[in-house]
Length: 541
Image (cartoon, rainbow, N blue to C red):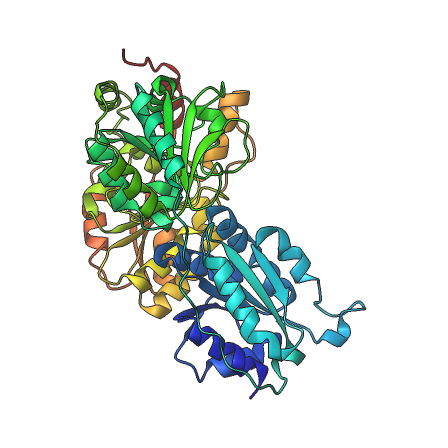
């Protein structure tokens, strides 16, 4: 058989369900072999969209998503989605074609060294130089992608190698096992918790990646320790739990800053510094910290911790079982009360205030439905004010913070969870970066809803400009007629023209059997008011 056929058999052995990508001359043998496979090839309109879709597949399922491109510009177009997966720790395998190996020593059409280009943004990457090595290479790529911290790997398959005749069989996957912390470290952590007057939990993306949300919920309720989550950890502790405080991620002072200031022990569970730097919550480097994670903590002067290294579920259960006392959460309950009475964003008016849009979104979606936030000013409002009740129901790119991710990610979400409502919340800037994939959603018959926060500008950047310089520059642009644009793609378009229309429009849009665009004008003057209120926060006694 051809090496490309062996390659596809190896992907089948890895239980790959979808490959997102574009065809090209240098991956023709892979595509031909794929045409005889049960793996479904999802043709996208841009390689960046394919990478975002694979990225989202990894984040939702915990198994590596797979994307495919040809050489040169096709491969470089994958880079943003790969880098996003790298910093957001999403398991993913990127496959790229390449020119025949005889051309590598000289200037050749469309040839650049993609393996070197991808090395800084992947956990591991390699060029297949002999077809016989494919089973080992594919198994290694998937294994390394899945092992904590999970992330992207990359395989380059040159066209002449793909066409080789080879013999070989796939290497079947084996389970990944993590150790558990030694008892002496459990004892050290128990003593630290017992001695703490005001401990607090900081839960990150690793809790959701490792499926440890229930274990964390049991831990905080048994010990009566309140928890905050990172933007990417939203839903690890339900927003309606009495022990949930808030999300963290705003670099400006927020009510949760009071919690960190009061805390004499931070229990960081599945937390990565890339989500929210510890210099923001431990500026004086004086907090005692317990690090609960699958791998040792990142080296950071603001993050010196007692380390409990092992499978997070197991560690939390061991710790919970070893503790026969509860803590006094009264300060944090007072803090929660202060949060409820402060930062109540303005609701009335047109264009709509961000808080009104967030409230309408929450009302329209069920507890297990999915909201995917793109990057922009709206992300701050959603991350801070949208209650998340279950893991992976609010998905935000925060490590790399790549604009344009929400529409492709929503496509993946709807493919995986047809019974759930899926909304992509996007700024007008981010939506137009992802626009080609609207055709993909229409072609696949996926009834997702894209809610566009329309301010005719890059609202997050102008927010920062006004805070720093008192004026904005280079952030305004024009937009097409989004309703007509939706119609031209075969989707359904709505335009919000008054403050009371969004709720009914969302309700109607979520019943459609085609993709929907909602053009919703937004009043981002609220951004400055939010910043001003954050600056006036007084911590409760």
